[in-house]
Image (cartoon, rainbow, N blue to C red; front, side, top):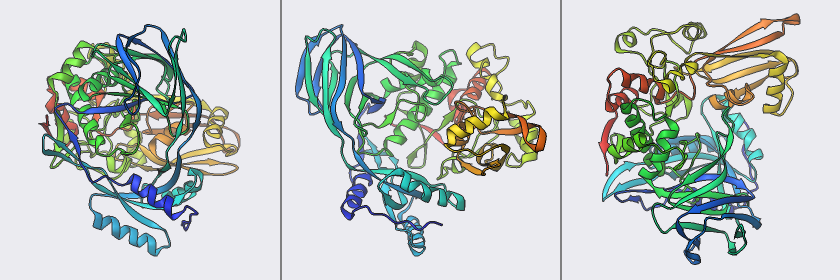
Length: 548
């Protein structure tokens, strides 16, 4: 174990901890909460067009251009800027009570680690009722000037295998800068400090942002022009570039989430299940967000894919409005209702994928009741996972034959394979890891979850061996883009000196596998299950409750 040390000043540490800690006041939601969604980040310039009447103000609300209409293309660009300054710590574990967190911190301090505890998360209140109790406690070690300094300490805790640590950054100094804003004819122009807000004067006003990045790091990555309603805020981001934020009502947000996460041609009861799952996840994450950040969450698949008005559909919007206010709850908390495209026939436990665990997110076979009762494979064992992946069990996750085109297409994720020559895979691994492992000898899964997804594997090379932790990291290191899932077995064709000539990944599922399997939800709906039955199948012990 590495002993942590830091040169961070006491003042910076106090500032960071104060910024990271949970505020005293709960999140107050009215009949319709407002959310702030990060649309793009890291741009030197952003182009946009506005259809309808609007005003542009400073971040403080002072008018720059009031009550105007302009169908011209506008541009804003960074004139000058300075990025925010951070310190970095390693989050060791998260607890629901302060006493357990303090016990672990004391143990770590006895081992010469500068451990401390910090509260995060808040209560969410709707019309004076506490609908979500989100306060938790993090155990944190170290305070480093750069993420690179924190990484060896992260790896040391990872290699011990007792925790699932990650790096957390704390802002100690805000970004600042000046933005030039102008239309295509330069009839209207302004220099703005920090940022500005485009505020529609009519709810039907729409704002197009050009070249929004979609699917970053995945096989569908592309740039796309997207249309949004609500307020658009553009400001200096943490690195001194531009970030664009959409501020809008929660159900309006969900109208842009549901059709992006689930195709509108899926059965209607599946669309309603998706709407409730997406709403629950949004509300629960509002309590967990870093309150000193300008956004509540991003518009990417790392949170929930959000496409604004661009992909809105009458059916998905109706599913949102017919379930308005409905969420899944267990006891005093709204559920973190994770979902994935296709589990491959067995969902994963959140505790194994992204601790801490939740009682309603335990891995289960996604099978009809009679087959589920007889399921006996242990997918953490290599022999059983090979049997599972090489078979086609009667899981809801296999949609072939539903005669719904967009649902049937997901059969390609139920079982899949990807093949590389050894040299191709060596080149990919070298690019992704940033160093040369030499000649690839083997890839060995070390730890699997209950769904068979690998969360730790070792790559063996003639120059060095390297362990990779985390299902998403594993998927990225072994692919030009990202493997569909980390639920796979490795099949090789041997060559001379025992080195493989060809490596094939035989896999199951698409995504992390936790929570609702969207493909299976669609199949369940075709077999007569309603949205509440579908949700309660995946979120064990949770109940659908209307909170506004």
